[in-house]
Image (cartoon, rainbow, N blue to C red; front, side):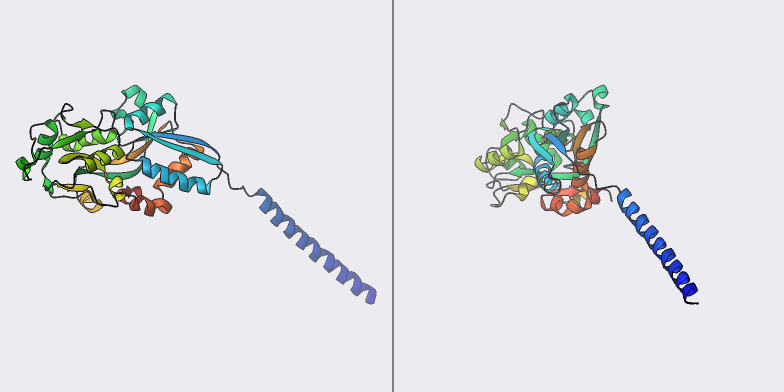
Length: 294
């Protein structure tokens, strides 16, 4: 009896042990077969829009913090430069205020993909001594075409208007011409021309009676409040007025790639327009894609 009981107990122990061993083996196999998280690596170069540049740089710093094996450099130069450089393969990303098809011929543009990453409002900005607070589309067209040359002609004080233009390569200028001038030709012979948002900001601050247009992301960094924004048709460059269709001077911000974005480039672009980065996008004066998609 004792021997039989011992045999039964031993057999049961051996079966239980075998089952336990099998379970452990399956768990181990499952863990082993799990795909490890893919670590991103590589070098990304971006160039183009100075309106998008601050956001691209901020996003690059945050993205590299999470992905230490990725190196990202961001330069300005204007939307046209960015689009041409990505088309030629000189950079992986061309930052732009406009779609590639507005700067390239149709065949070249077919090779590129316009990745929308944010929206941005632009403002008509004036020197702090200008007393005008609202302009109609017609008045803005008259100022930049050279028809109106004194602020008193549009309700301001007797002071010469100093126009600050943007170069032809500027995506901000292209948006200005499309949404504000609407076929009226800007007169490049009047005033001066500045090639970046930062240069416009400095010129406006230092030139009495001056007027230009500027990405609202640069207004966020104007801690001293030296720059003044003029309303357009009594509407302001805010998300609310843009969403209501009241404010015309805004555009999508694009990260243009040659073909579909892949690997680290795709992850970087997805990061900028994603939910986790949304708060930073708003704080910097841009409009998140999460809101524009609605």
